[in-house]
Length: 527
Image (cartoon, rainbow, N blue to C red; front, side):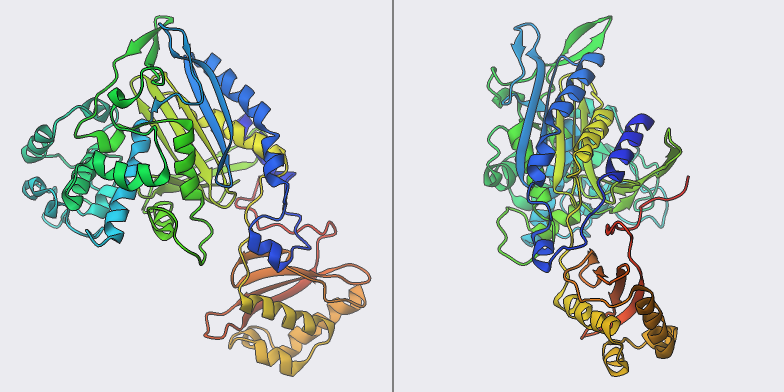
């Protein structure tokens, strides 16, 4: 991540804090407080177009396409350059690009659908579906047998295999079987380390075929593409109309040289797919629509809970830290979910992404589940790296002031506890305090001391009124709210205990920020 981009994004987000002092429970339930948020985010589109076009020019990318997803809609599309240099054919909104390793999330989704349909378990030994694996020579006598979960999370112990895997796409089913039977070397025992394995996801494609009873490409078409209305997505370049297909190129000797379209084969489940902006926008929107967890009818081909499962760290990966140009700490940590990379940084607590690179192509999809926003990018130059321009695009979105996280919905118990604790602020009552307190509350600090603290705060600020709504809800059982008073406001914070009837295990009263703005604690601190 370029330091200047991190700096600009930090600056933009610093000016876009959560001004939520008067949020009602109804507003919180809707997720986002600002009804004009989508229009405000749309205002960043011209800046993002410039970022992407400048990147395509500077990196010698013949043609590129990008999209901004907001609340389940492809809110903006941008294109530049040529999909076919020889024919001078421009990229348009329907151009189909190879997305390479972004295919892995489709494979993981297929596995979870089979799991949900009772066709397999993630902890099944992989050799149950791929008998050729039974003859593997494991690195130690105490190594566990490979499971589907190992394959899904890149914890097989197979060696990292980029870019070797790119050239395996055309392998036949018979060749894959022979490769496995001949043996696979291990760099680690299964289950102890993250190591990216295209080979492992090729094996998952074989498992989809065996568990479903139909070829992998037919299964994903029937159970993912068609239910989602993804009409341009395929594993076969030959299935794409010639006037929509992006040709791939490498930049060499100060000129573009066309790369051969790698055919679909037994390794297709690790990186063979092609798709368009509209289709990928629909696909990313499906992941975003899984948030927040909620009641209601399931409308997708895969359960919302399974989609959220894909977006959680299953195998931790490397972390890194660096200083930005203005001395701020930039920390990135995370790992791999199921077919998706998951990370946390000093700006965003939950980032979901995957890139894809093949000879002739480079792509990325990245989204923020808490924010309901995502960005997708395609390029037709070998291993196009979209990380920096996507960082810059999120900075442009943040600069609008509308890139703010969804507020969790408070539980009924938290709403009731808010009312009761507010009554204590207005007029302390020992009986009321005892009735709402968890076992620990007055052992941690006595009831007399807490009563005195509340009285001291009231004396400082004068008469108070109840106010309304929450200032900040961290989760269903933890929140903060402001009590307006004559000479300054008070900020109340509570956390409820995990009891059948939730009681108050943490309770604090202190001066509210003079600005009236309450934010969640910073993800990183220090200079």
